[in-house]
Image (cartoon, rainbow, N blue to C red; front, side, top):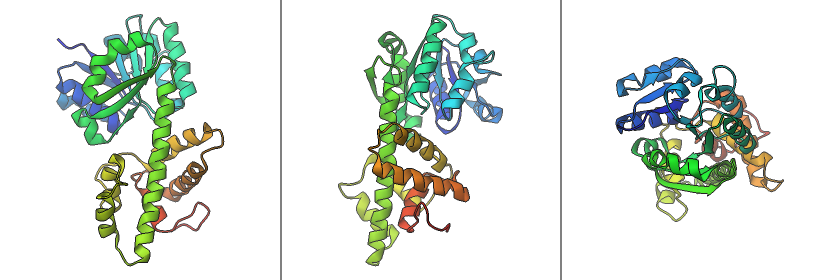
Length: 295
């Protein structure tokens, strides 16, 4: 029988992890700060637990997907944290996009409990998570990676172990999400240029997505400019968090990244934080500037 797996954090991506793993036959125990999100997974056989510690007490392999660095500290530490429920048999796969240094900090605490932790950030869309077609980067002890590999393979089309140094995979994840923001800015500028010549966004989107510039990310996100999804795939606030982490660690090189960060900060300050991250494309196409007037 497939081994039990714990999922800590069942937001847009974590809930899909839980459903997929349960669908593959794993007993899945889950916790989320908002209990209703776990309750919504009960039809898939996911069992709700009251704390991250309770999840760890029932599962030796944990998948964590939480909002930011402080959220990771919160679910890991303290009497209700997953570290308190761990033994030497445990492996934590932290798929959250957090600061690399914080991931390494928690990995050290996990090692102190005799267990192991990998940072395993993902790249891909929500439908890729549903179908197991994500790309997963991993760093941390190779023994832990080998132990967790079957679960990672169930979630991804490609799994890459990049280093035994915890936090290394997260550095790559930040590099990727920085480029997501830069591509979004460039896309918005392209729409604005097309508009100057009377080409509407529908036609410009169709033509540009058929060209060499169309990355996988643009293929699924650029259409959101025309027709926002019913469920936010990644919010403007999420992209602001990730770009801010990346810019802060860029050694002063992220000139375009600072522009994207500042425009995202304006978007979020204008009460658009919960909108799809494609809002960055729309803002650029509409001629917004970080220090400009609110629309």
